[in-house]
Image (cartoon, helix red, strand yellow):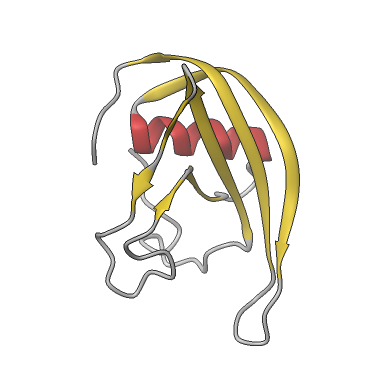
Length: 109
């Protein structure tokens, strides 16, 4: 597993991915409880994260899903780009995906 941008001493990018993985009408969700000061603390969200340097949206999507779930996506679709704007933090651009085919062994983190 690779070290995160913060562990390497770099500022996190404002580019992220988020994926809703569906199978048989059900969605894989993550319950965010590890980081106390996480904006998504105690929320159920899809799978995703910040881009690494020089990654494309698809590369980030595939890496984040593999790191967080152990799954390898076989079929996914870009649904849109969401822009989060605030006067309190940097504008974030989120590439939103859905996926409906995958293989691998689901792991918990």
